[in-house]
Figure 1 (tube, rainbow, N blue to C red):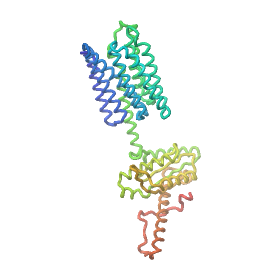
Figure 2: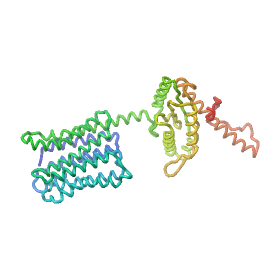
Figure 3: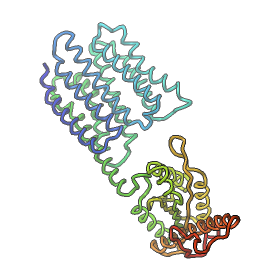
Figure 4: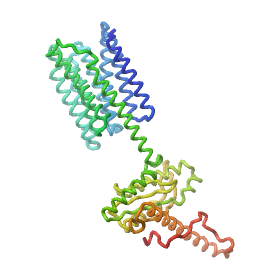
Length: 456
């Protein structure tokens, strides 16, 4: 038994438990893949406990240990690919997992399988290249070609050195591990280009981890008498583990901040963030002597949708409406959910009353059609819109919001009044209307201004 691996095995088992504990508070698909990767690292150290066993037992332990280390790196790499759900990305991951495992197995049992080493080395570069070329017209990304280039270079290097005495196979195995973890470094740098401690530590840790497989052979070749403890070689692994835990914690903090400022259902800014952005838009418009507009949109038949189709359908309506509103406005504008069925839209400068009116009409046009829902269903709703323009209708946030609300209720009252007139005209064709039974506004709306969306 190789008892020197026991401290590392214990330490990484505890790290994996800590990682799982942190991940449990905010689980994501990425963190789940990371956890499987760290379990592979634990398997690596567990297998290396039996590395000194004689005969086939020691060989099997080495194959399992090295394969687990390769699989850990491939999982870390795959998790950092933004398009990992794309079918060709899964195919490349599977191809790399199979070809790397095949080569490291043949390399370990060499010279028994020395004749198969060259085809296995060629497959390392050919397999991802063929898949990438097969789907190049449909799916093409720079990060993918970085990975393909890495494995093409690895394949060429292995073919050149693996049969060189006395340590060609060892150099080839180190090259495989270097490629895997240098690929992790590049992929994490690509996906986590942010100035945080977690990103820096993780990327630097992967760079150091890959460098181990270069420095160790150089040390053996030129400084064989220098003794370095195994814990030193494993230090980058601990650095990566700490960095990835920090990344999880940073993501959880950002998620908490997002929840504090965004609506949980639609993902849109909530009233708190809306007020902050409106204040900023007004201040910017004030300094630049331009205009900013506020639109308040209230859904008319939303209560009926909730009552007749259920709250889960109402939630889908709100999500769909929020997405449609976001698609209609500019990237610099803000769509916020500021009430149960109320949305507020900030049109940042440059804007004008005519542009705000045009946007309002387009939103009404969108909601004049049935809102598509899951399962092929749809819901018919309408909306009332109020517009207020800075500085004409208000010179501060409070007065602008009040004016937009009043005009929204005026628009709603106009629509209700028109509906009442239509109903009364229909009744008069059949029987006189009793004045004592004249329908009243069920919502208590009253006209507050003569402006409407058509003449603003």
